[in-house]
Amino acid sequence: MWTFALRRLLLLIPTLIGITLVTFAVTRSIPTDPVIATIGEQAAEHPEIVAVYRKTWGLDEPLPIQYLTYVRRLFIGDMGLSIFTHRPVVQDLADYLPATIELATVAILISILFSLPLGIIAARLRGGLLDIAIRAVTTIGVSMPIFWLALAAINVFYFHLRIVPGQGRLDSGLAPPPSVTGLYVIDGLLAGDLTVVANALSHIVLPALVLATWSIGLLTRIMRTSMLAVLHQDFLRTVRSKGGREFYVLTRHALGNAILPVVTVMGLAFGDLLAGSVMTETIFGWPGIGRYAYSAAAHADFPAIMGVTIVVALVYTIVNLAVDLFYAVIDPRIRAAMA
Amino acid sequence: MSAADMRPVPEPRTALSRRIAGKLAVLREHPAMAASLMIILAWCILIAGAGIFAFADPLRPDIMVRLKPPSLAHPFGTDQLGRDVFTRVLYGGRSTLVGAIAVVSAGAFIGTLLGAVAGFSRRWVDELIMRITDMVLSFPIIILAMAIAAALGASLAHGVIALAAAWWPQYARVTRGLVLELKSLDYVAAAHAAGRHPAGVLLWVILPNALPTLLVMAAVDIGRAILNFAMLSFLGLGARPPAPEWGAMVAEGAQVMDQWWVATCPALSVLTLVMAFNMIGDSIRDRMDPWLRQRR
Image (cartoon, rainbow over all chains, first blue to last red; front, side, top):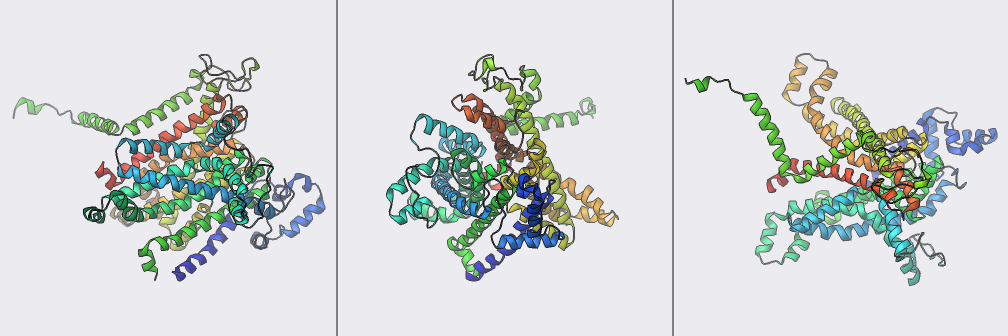
């Protein structure tokens, strides 16, 4: 188990090098002058700023050296200054990332909550009306332009029905809980402040639901397919013939065998949730890196958008690593193969 | 031998009509697939014949009729500048669909080329190409595309380039797999033995046999490309207003959500077209999966 974990962690190194190579390539292959792109046109009018910038980032050196400088600066947490906010990009990201992690985590929890039962029911009642209905709804879910769904949801639930609070992570009268994890719900619980927890939850539920639409659709479909492949197997017949109740058969015996592909896709879906957060956060005014990426794109704030790209790729990689490790936890066969 | 036996057999014709009938029977068995094909066909006709089906000018504002709800004169209503939403949806579909097809074509072309070379070449070339593929795969598509589009500057063409640059890796992987599988087959060995140049073998013997799979993959992929292209435009990184494009139109409609038709009509257009492509993809996957087919 530990050797497997270690080997998997070591594999992270080439991936990280790959991520920096791709982002570096994007930075250097753009047709505009990278100096103007990264410090902005205003600053580029001052030759002394340009000179300092060229020296810091080794822009007069050959490309491989430039790359090494780039990686070294990344390593010490220097992603440059945001052209729009005039703050270090790393600082911006540190401020905004927890909000996105919180939103994406709640969204993935909502997806699991909906998609596992729906997928199991659809598989069990295959071909029935409920199965057809679930399949129709999930097809709509994966085909939905969520930017429109977000707009429609705000319009209906906030402007007309007034049953959800407005923008942001908390009502404006409330102070955020003392920061431990940066996730307001958890920090609120840690501080024992239930008002903040309730308020944070009421703020997060609608954006998380909208964000989860796509992954609910995806995970339900995978769950259904995977369950179908398990349902006709002999060991389930054995359990049934021993008089096992259907609910017990499905949850205790079938689910464990059908869940692996769902877990894989869950990891991949998390990356898509981070990407989808650009839309959701922008529309819901959620102060996360998705909205930050949008405003960066809108203001041609190149360092900021590269920072988001790196961080998202990093989180995506780490989540998929966690999924790989989680396999070993839930599948005794993999554990045995690794021992 | 009787006279009846001497009659020329109209075989090819029967075979052809039987084959067509067979294809249609498949559609009858898969109503979802038939419906999806009809939806796509209908959209293609509407979009291609935008000038015939819609008579308004998609760009000219007419303040006198701004924000009118759907009516006979304006089936999808009018937007805040008084432009006919139906007309703009039809013309906008051109940008969206053509953009999406361009993304998939470019992505599939680059991916197929790289994958084919990887599967056919020496070990280290293969390794190199596949590691690059994995690198690009570790980015969510829309984030990488945003970065590239932001660097290039927002325009329809740049949106296509940005998405295509993030789109190719899956094609590289699939093509490599196919080439590895095909290159061990006898007729490929025969082509080598006949003294054909290796590049010729790859291009004219192996790739044509990989093509059907790749074409199906690309056709089904268009739905996902539409969604991503519309997203990029919604964020202001693809097609730019006032040019109509479905994602950009939803963004314009965002300011007047109480006049629901302005944003909802282009959004529903995206939804129906993407759904149609997704349902075709599902049907094909179901048919290809022997276990599911047998259980149907």
